[in-house]
Image 1 (cartoon, rainbow, N blue to C red):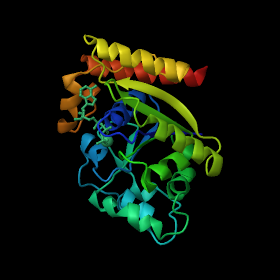
Image 2: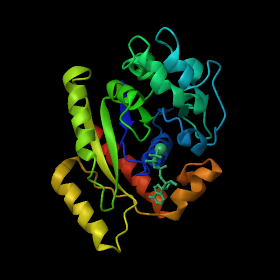
Image 3: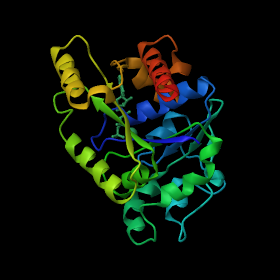
Length: 259
Ligand SMILES: Nc1ncnc2c1ncn2[C@@H]1O[C@H](COP(=O)(O)OP(=O)(O)OP(=O)(O)O)[C@@H](O)[C@H]1O
Ligand SMILES: [Mg+2]
């Protein structure tokens, strides 16, 4: 059964999309079958893998989530990416309205789970890239997921707002998805030259203990450049520190799941 991982943090710009793209591509290069699901109206994941404006025969994630009746087959929304074994369900700007449209629909929190369940055994990993909010789209991701992966930008306010996310995860466990786990907390945009980065990293490790990934993602310009070429960083500059870090993260994830 494929593991569904929601890449989530309601704070903006912490590296959610960068992590979803590059971790997914690293796993695909390690011969894992991976599905990426873009549920952010900004569509950064979709454009970051070079598929901006593309849709499957059934449309985009917007069409899949807002049909009158819950959609039970995601395959018409699949599109290939430039990476073997890496499939995408794209997003588009219509999704901006979905938070509101979903409110009036049946099974509004479970639509993504219903959509993805039938293809779980066709993939080893399914990553859902969440928007920077705790609205209905993120709720759908956390209800569908086995676990949340939380990227944390190593800066002063990193831990602020995290209590809200942890609280949301607790409430979802109590009400809608008892098995929801925390896959791990990932330190991103780490700058080893600053004391602040070190301090934040040590605070986060004290708070989340072994839930924090050993792998730390450094600040690296290649990670910022790669999406404008529609490529995961390992296809853009495999020797960069950013590529090395995400390849190491994929190995760590695979080791953990084998343990
Ligand atoms: N490790 C890194 N080093 C340098 N730049 C990075 C790194 N990680 C991400 N970036 C850049 O920082 C910006 C924010 O990253 P990203 O889009 O992944 O965050 P996000 O959490 O998905 O944002 P949003 O909340 O808007 O969805 C992007 O321009 C991205 O290219
Ligand atoms: Mg994003």
